[in-house]
Structures are given as C-alpha cells and as structure tokens.
Image 1: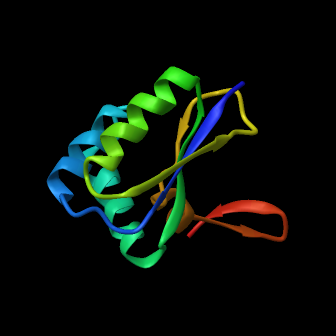
Image 2: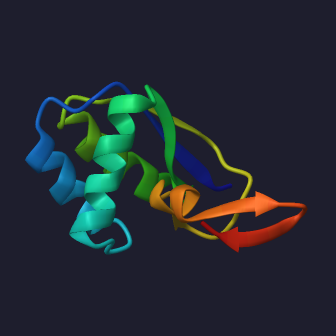
Length: 101
C-alpha cells in the first residue's frame, strides 16, 4: 500500500521547511519556495504521494518538526510524486488541451 502526505497550516520554521522540501525529489529552491508561498494561500495541500509506510513516517516527522500539522493517508498512485504548485500556474486546460499560459 502506498501513502500520501497532506499538510495543514503554515510552518513556524520557514528555512527548516525549505530544507526538508529540498530533500524530497530534489526540487529547485524556487520550486520549494513556491510550495511555501502556496501554503500561505491554501491552508491544506497534498504535498507528497506514492510513498511507502516507512518513507511516509520519516517525512511526516520531519515536516511536523517545522510546525506543520501533517496527515498521512492512503494514496491512489503508486509512483512517488512531489506536488509542485507552479505547474498549475504555468499551464491551464483549454478545450481539453493543455496549453502554456
């Protein structure tokens, strides 16, 4: 079974949060900061999906140490993925086709 991590709130320790996010899938600093900014607007996001039980527990404990509320749930996907909100900004669906904004 695979798991997903949802986070709620805003981290008390921003730098520690950015360092933790940079460990997950190696996003750029800009992408990690996009996630941080997205948390200011969205109170609850699914951050990572497709993790094993051990990975989910390790990552959730690191995220909790930044001051976030973390919820580990069952995931639909099998492939580990980091959800980066900048993808939503860069592309939009138009008449069923993916087009660059």
